[in-house]
Every structure is written in C-alpha cells, then in structure tokens.
Image (cartoon, rainbow, N blue to C red):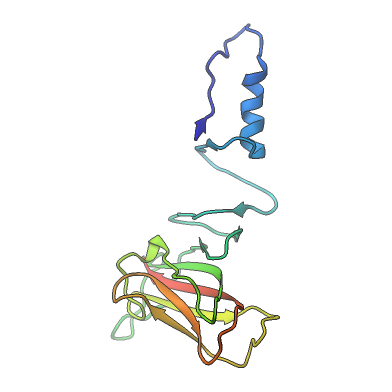
Length: 175
C-alpha cells in the first residue's frame, strides 16, 4: 500500500496537485494507503470496518462488512469467578462480538486472534443467537463447537435444522 508523503512540499514552494490528491485519494478510498495515527482520535458517527480490529482497550461499537466478522469491544470486566469463588480483577476479561451466516446450518470457522491457544469453556465462552427474522429463530438450538482442543477457533451449528440463517455471537475470554 502507498504511504502518504510530504516529499516535494517545502516552505514558499508551489503546492502541486499530487500533494493534495494523495490525501483525498487516501480518505475517500480511491487509492489504498497505510495510515498511522498518533495521539487521540475522536469521531462522531459510525465507523465501518472491513477486516479485523485489534485493541487492548476499546469502547463503543463497530459495524463490519463481511460474512464472518469479529470485533473487539473490550472494556475492563471483573465478572468471572475463579475456582474457590473469588473474582478476577478489572481488565482480565476481553469481549468480542460478531456475526456469521450459516450455510446448511453451520457457520464458517470463527478464528479471532485474541483466542489463539485458548480452550473453549475454560479460557473463553461463546453465546450465539439467531438474528430476528430468521427462518426459524426460536425453534432450534445453536451449538458452539471448538474446531480442536486449544485451537481458539469454533463454529456455530444449528441443531436439527439446515438453515442459512444469520447468527450473532458474543465471546468472553481471559486476556
């Protein structure tokens, strides 16, 4: 990808069209640029994301444009009891939320990098529901199945149906 450049921009010199159009192309998506922000970033309105998002701390919500999306929506949490009844301190839990489309009753494999090496029901927990308006939103149970022990990836299966419904899921995991 291209990188925004200040090359050729000097004090007292004439501003050339390329000095301006590279920024316009980057922010309108005409040309793909790698953009790195430093400092605070504030936006009003929606942020649409295609691809993945990684974050150590994020508040708000993200809307994705893919059939299988996982987005970090992580805030410090302290709700998970340890063995013996004590609770983990703030920041020890992460939260992922996403959506997937079933094909013949089964989702594609969902493999967020935050779950790499984690074990289902021990280091991460998943809940899923059918999206309102699905062909059978309340008639069948959804099952979460790990692809392999400790793989940190799972899929969602509609028990007793082979629908192509949309499902939403939430993952809580140990950080």
